[in-house]
Image (cartoon, rainbow over all chains, first blue to last red):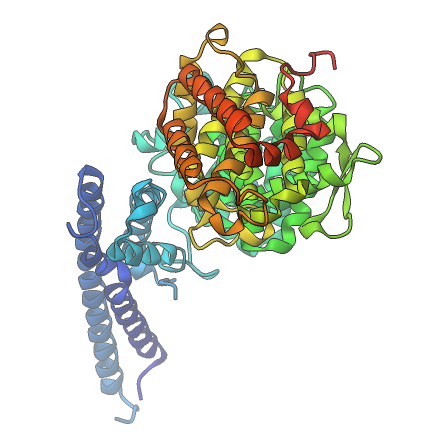
Length: 92
Length: 541
């Protein structure tokens, strides 16, 4: 039976993956589709789109980071389970 | 739907989310709103941009944070007292006398503390205000000592109620020589007018707030104008039942004008009131007509029973005189009168013969004329009114309770058209020298405007000729009148126009007795005659 710490780590991993999905599906990640030359042109629109792309790149990197951290939490939880299973007197 | 997480492992991601949101608010929203408010959007509208604007309006729901979200940075762990100490230090050590400009400029310029820590401090303040009522009340009570709290409103998601509660204290502190205080007031006003026109009207209904705005010497006039117009016009456009509250504001202003504002109200307040008059002129004109017995101007919403007293005629005259001390406000009031003249005469149709509607315009003209004490001001008002009447913008705008929610979108169209007409009228006024023309007095111009609008209506509506007793006028004469009216419409030179009008008068008087008779029915009443008299009331009354 998994220990409390392993359960908590898996919950955290689940929440981080959920957060990553929420960020990916947010409208900011697809806003540039509405902001092409058919909508507006000029230096300020270009600045807006460039800033957005910069932010999107940051968010994509953060999403990757969240999923990597979630993977590490799951790995850590698995190791805790294994360690607990190897302890004498614990049923597997 | 909000994006949030209290997991420390998500802190970096949340920072990126906050940064993205801030960029959207600082760069995307202003641009979208500027494009939506542009002149081009009056006649052209991109479905793509509308779609983008709809998304923009949902930004506030996007990436919002709930109560459980930890704030970024060192402020999250501070006590309330420490936070206030931070504000004190920031206000006194980082802004005093270094000549580096506003807080907003410091943030934009990437200055230490302001660009990297103040936004986090603002976010922390907003979070505590949202979850801790006693802290919020403490900040409100001490707002004049901590104007940075109000500036923080522009950099985080504060509740609207907090801004509403903060504004009176900031305004009444009277620290108009302090740049930080003025920036704080402007930040709070911008938040309120953007978030809730109704809240702006509520605040204008506070006589102390109104008095502070009227005398706000260093307040940005564009923000003040937007705030007043948002409250007096947009709020009523959104909820016509609030027209009563709008009149309450004008009633308070009437009392204020009777006091210490001989040099006029703050320009932004005056301009905001003038902008809003498109929504009030119908009720005002009715009130002027209904108050003939005791010289008191009452408020009759939708021509119903009186719901209050705006003031006696002298006090209301003084109100508009005080508003019209500001040149831009004066132009807008002229545009309102000119557009209203044309609209009323066209709405009256054949019943113009009853004279009541025409007399009401004359009385409004007399009231405005009596508020003027300066010849150049009178010229400018006359030019604006005449330009608006000739351009027939009354048909575009509409007036009164039935027109608040216009298919053309009154708010944007009004401002755009007014800007065009004011520009045109300013040119006209600047070209005309008082000695070069026969009579450009406001009263005379208004009188002539009424005359020409009636003539134009009669010319354009042959189906009413029998009712107006002008069916005996020959087709040749109608063609001649039409040609002369067209020539007047396109003639830019005021002196030549006067000559054309004089010739038209002679033609009607000497050759078209039916039209001459129709016109004499209007010209013969007392208000029209008084309007035609040159000159205005002397400055001392």
